[in-house]
Image 1: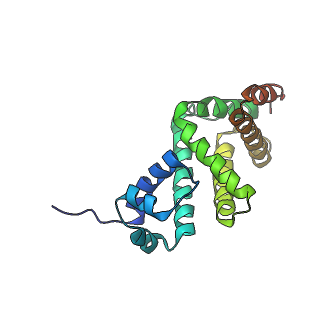
Image 2: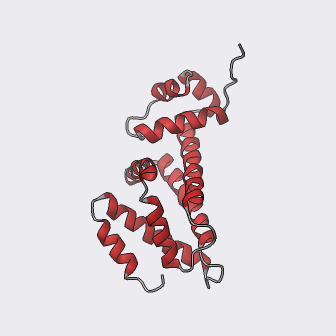
Image 3: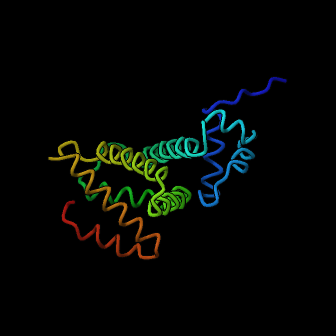
Length: 180
């Protein structure tokens, strides 16, 4: 019987699944290693240190999230900035996205505490999402960079309001914007 060779690429999906299920609070190497079927020493061997491991997992998860958006998002570009925001909000309301949002609020909380690793990871995630939004705006958008920033701001605000039980405020705000 041959044993599967461990690598960063083979470990990341296993660790990502654990993080999606359990979040980032009280994150330690032993549970991550157990979830990946290896030792904490091997995680350090493959990732260097815990901060680099967390950064790699968050990058992997942001790619998973963007892939899930691509799969769930209607084909083609949105017809307007507002339609893009509305479609993202509607698509991400699916319960399959809930683990990503629970994790996102863990990351935001770490950023609010000034944790450099979370700040770097959150910045990279936001850059990735900004690129994703820009690619889904109408082809004739007069300023896709500014449009993507506006749409991402609206999406994040609406998602935060939904997380605190006030989704109707976010939905009303999006609907109240002319053509965004």
